[in-house]
Image (tube, rainbow, N blue to C red; front, side, top):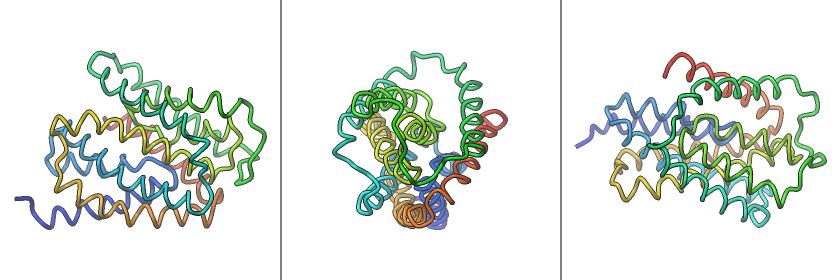
Length: 249
């Protein structure tokens, strides 16, 4: 029997993680350490984290979609590609050497932070796409989905910068589209974890309750303040993730 106070504390962590994740990604930086600190084995913590994150991300996606910041029909091929890539990544994780990612990913996250910090034209207005959206967003989805399946940290930042830099989406629309693909990649991982019995359901349910509230508030906040809030939060989250990967593995 799990301590009710522990479940309440984890629900609060889920709320905060859902809020941050709905705006800038990186909620797992808060929720996964909390699950490990609660005594869950690493694989069970990862699986439970994916489960509670899926619930929060689905709330964020629906909120951005209802407000007109996600065009789901245009993302259908990318959603399918992201699911396939993440599923393959999760299946290949035990056979892929991810040691190089321990250094490469923090460098990439710092580069993203610097871009969002200094790029002068980042706003909520769409710009001209540098690449054909319909043809190459699925390629991006597959590649980043595969990365999420085998490693994961920074997935939201990578999706967001791709939508902004390569495909010309305004920052709020990029964030909404990121949530749709991030939801998909987490769902694919759960297709592996749930049949293995790795999800600790009482913990996932408690954190998911917090996630729903946090994700809704976070998405509404992101929509209200747009690039003014999303831009600095992406910088903060990317740098924090890079520091965590470099110094607190």
